Amino acid sequence: MQIAVVGSGYVGLVASACFAELGNEVICVDNDSSKLAALQRGEVPIHERFLPELIARHRGQRLFFSGSLERAVRASQVIFIAVGTPSRNNGECDLSFVEGVSREIGRAMNGRKIVVEKSTVPVCTSDWIRKIMLLNGAPRSSFDVASNPEFLREGSAVTDFLYPDRIVIGADSDTCAGVLRKLYEPLICRTYARQKDAVPAPDDATTIPQLIVTSAKSAELIKHASNAFLAMKISFINAIANICEAVGANIEEVCEGIGSDRRIGKRFLAPGIGYGGSCFPKDLKAFRSVAGEAGYDFRLLDEVIRINDEQCQRFLRKVRSALWTLKGKRIAVLGLAFKGGTDDIRESPAVELVRALVRELAEVVAYDPAATERAREVLADDAVTFGDNPYDVASDADALLILTDWEEFAALDLERLRNELKYPIVIDGRNLYSPELMSELGYMYFSVGRPDAMPKERDVTRLKKAG
Ligand code: NAD
Image (cartoon, rainbow, N blue to C red; front, side, top):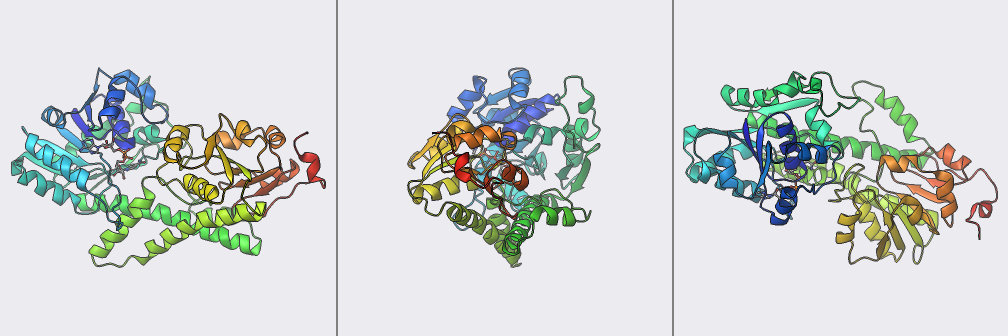
């Protein structure tokens, strides 16, 4: 199929590369000229596993990058809108990019096409896209508007796209649903997975993804409701972790106990410093506002947001109580991205915490495997320095904080790390290590919802860096 994808961000670029991988001819459009130039030179502007390989495989063959939405629309049967839908100051979703793109698509129409929302949008947006296209000259019978929400997660976006749990197609006509079903057929029937050069399936991939065909409105709601539910799960377990801390229980044991109920499940029961990123924070606010407009006061979401906001503050208090005063202390920070596997720092709790430490006049030295460059830009005004590896930043630090769940951070040489630190203090916002192990290794170790661990050895000073 001839496809246009509008927006070459985390969703648009991954979708473009994956649709090309499935055999389609794809034009990926962006109006950011520097991003476009980089893509046209073969550079990959985001950190995402398997993405550079897919782009290298298809660029110039089946995958093209363009600044002309008009040409892309005219050359395509299906047009995916994957532009940003950020928050406005009042929490509502800013749909101006979606509106601008719909206007341009309406003006460029030259035959039958399907316009698909891939961006996360409030329910009823498909009606608005239809109206805007009609107002801009698209003949009524020449197009369908469908919703195909994206569930990929940054850090595993390519495999999430190619091996999804489910594919939701929100279409208001059978023909339109049929075209989109055909597009996803290699994933639904798993013929893609059997291709000899296919991107390998993750171990936990479902054998056959579920295809869910709904109305456009239901599909729009599915995406907002999914993100709200996942965020609620995070805030819920963070609240339980806070109770564990207060009474001396262990959140890991509690998670094991509640997660083994199949109605609840173990996944996403991971306490920490709260959710962040470009989706949950904005989508919750947008959903809250959409519900309000629909006449439902969704106060549960306020509480989810409140617990999340508080989680960072609680962690900061934990740092203070481990170190007493922060002024002048050298603090090593591992992790700046909002989660492991990505370079995305939008709404990252790690960045928020770094800023808070700097405000308290701590000297922060940070390391992230992929997000340092982006963090350097947003933290340019703050007194933060960046190291080349975890041991480098730990050198002579008063304490080390773990703020992102990178796999690399869960596999550190802990003896070496301890010898680098001035004091063997680790405050782990992602629960990457077992308190028992850290205690054995001579650390003072503070994590989330679990008992603090103190060094097995009596004489802590013995563990200080030699000299
Ligand atoms: P992004 O900010 O990384 O990318 C958006 C891209 O759209 C940018 O490159 C921007 O230049 C481009 N753009 C904006 N206006 C344009 C226009 N008029 N013409 C052409 N290009 C234009 O955003 P993202 O993270 O890819 O998210 C896109 C949408 O997908 C959002 O609605 C988001 O909520 C949703 N989503 C994101 C994720 C994720 O993990 N990032 C997952 C699922 C859904």
